[in-house]
Length: 118
Image 1 (cartoon, one colour):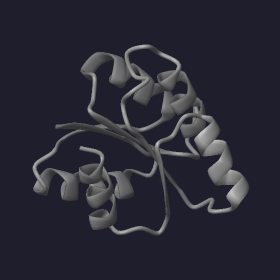
Image 2 (cartoon, rainbow, N blue to C red):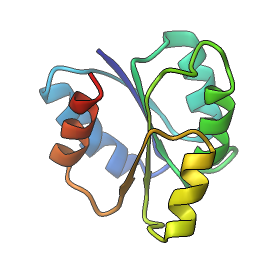
Image 3 (cartoon, rainbow, N blue to C red):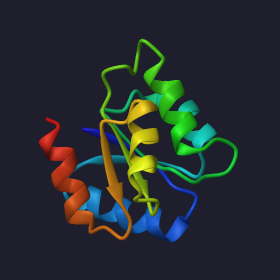
């Protein structure tokens, strides 16, 4: 199963990527929202994990763009963010996110969330 993870924080992205790989996922990484959109179109991931606050294109913008594309409308998108207010979660759902995981989080929590989608 291919998982695309996009986060501008390299250290966090590498830690999450390592845990996902150990769990048997094929992991692809992007450093911002625009890269995530471009890479998704290239690799057709099974799950997309997006940080909300990223340069060039936010996770919300990337999510909305991908979910608006016929190719990705059914692809699960998980938003990762430190923003945990109900209004933030509402914006994530409006952008089309399937799940919303707040930082700090454990990689196991993310892995369990991904596995629950399949």
